Length: 305
Image (spheres, rainbow, N blue to C red):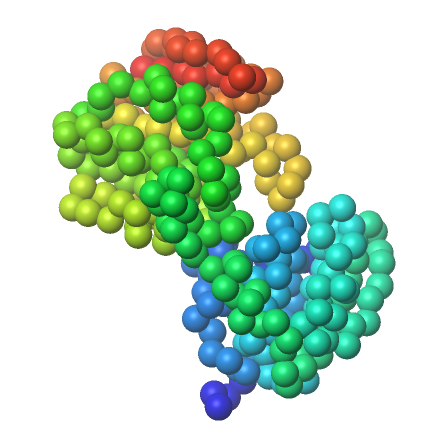
């Protein structure tokens, strides 16, 4: 058995609700550069604090991975807002064979449990949350990725409008590669960079589309897109939620990063919910802006730098 390493943390648990950790290793797939909990050795972590995901399958998978990685008897503290899985945390931990101490503070449920020697239902939870081929899409995906088992409406509408593309481009917030696959169907596309904040999405996209014309970046576009410049086109269905709360500034940041990465005359194809105020962010950054489609609560724009 491997010697226990430093404690682990998953996501960003509110400091006022979570026990302090000394120099923890980050394991969230939504934090670029974090370690992969899937690759952590069994019984190697002395402690884990987790902001549990809101999706049921994803949450049970993450908890199963954490329990497997903990030394028997080591503490797992899992917390979540009551309306985003917190109300079910204690029951889910108990189903794994854990003895759970539970508390409620600031609309969160905070559960602490020592890792049992025998984890009930571990293999089932890991199998349910693992990557899989979505037959209806012909693409690999995983629970927890945005729109993981279907093409979301905004992307579907953008696909209807997308012309034949050429040159070098990027897919901002690529997910599993739905838009990228359509772009690569154009023989004139020489290079396509797929970028996402979710490591699982990048892993799936690489599995779906790896080839001589593609490259993949696990990155947070709120940082910088300085690594990209002179692009001929960018595709995006920008996110507008951060941690479950609506954040219009997130999509506006994607638009600014697109303008920075495009060459003069380069084109940004964007789909977004109708209520999002992206026109104001686009107008000063692009020489032309055309509303190509408005339907089903979405807008599709073509903007030329």
